[in-house]
Image (cartoon, rainbow, N blue to C red; front, side, top):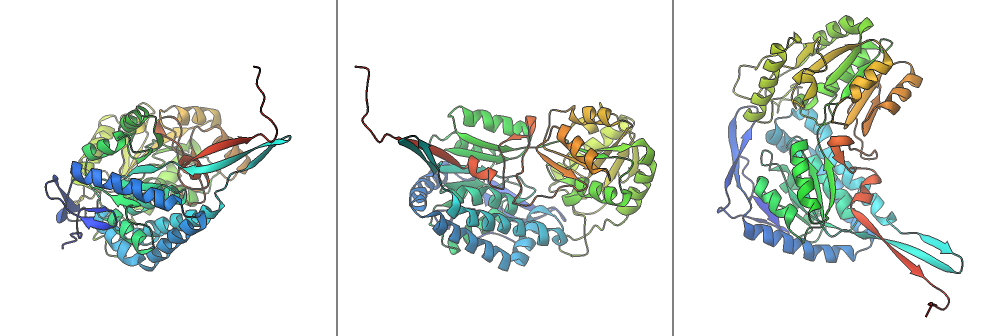
Length: 483
């Protein structure tokens, strides 16, 4: 199986290759097979992308918002028309089951392009009367934005960053994760086909040194990163040195609280979505599952039974609903955490083992009797490992849920909606759920508080992070001075 792209990079409207860059192997997580090789961007290619982006941005910003929106909406239509082939590519790139990628990845990217395409024509300023004088505001683009993607949602993240950036009149250079470099190239192709000017959306491959060169270049005006907290802190600091705008969508160790009046079947579904979708490789996952003691054993028994429905195998088979880790390295990290959980005395209810096959599969794993100070309850694992903790009182569980440096997401399951709203109101998290988990429609803001990030993606909130406001005071009479 070979999925070699036309070239490693997409710059100024065309594929570009320079094999002087370090080779990066693209590995299919389901088999360990090498599918393709791309090369890291050289300094010359980074320069070409920046020059192209700066030029294209000026051209693009002269268009009306409606004209820009038309291009984004055409791109959304093309993505939807090609959803199957883009989903197949996403599955090869990430290992996620095709059953999942067909409904959650390219389609989500198309939703973002359509939503922000529709919003682009409405991005206006305001008139502020000041007696006889008045002030008007103008919403302007930031300029050249850099997007740095994570490996778990390569198509979606490229679109989530590109759509609001382009709607506001910016250009973007996108650096995918070196683990999943293929999908963003297709997004770049489609934007050109939809009518975007050459250079507006460029894709550069590479590891940290390529990202570092982009983040620290003085011609870059904005940096948007999806990644881990340690990486986010480094990128944030580097961007702050030049006073660049930033959006940081980082990790979490999010709480999911299940009260004893919750519908157990629904709560189990929520916990599965919060821990095992994408094989646990989702930043917002609710991996600390607090279950009120009265229903703990019933919850665990039903959860173990439901997990027997996990079907592993070739992710291109639509009957498969549980895929591998994205890489051997990530598999080893997760297996290490499972061993730490065992050593700390947590009880394995389900799973806990690597699957004997060519790919990077781990069984969906549930630990019970987890204590707050255990490593598996403290650190982001980013794999199919659920930690179940007991609680008795509402006030106690809120305090424990908030006792973390993270604040990305949180969820509550209860039939008492007053309690649901009350508890969510007390939780320190940016994206919350009541009787659900991990819904991420483009219409809703997504992002965290505390160490989990800065700024918001999606919704009208994203416009604030890809534009700036200029105010103009207009004096209608004579201007006077004291001397």
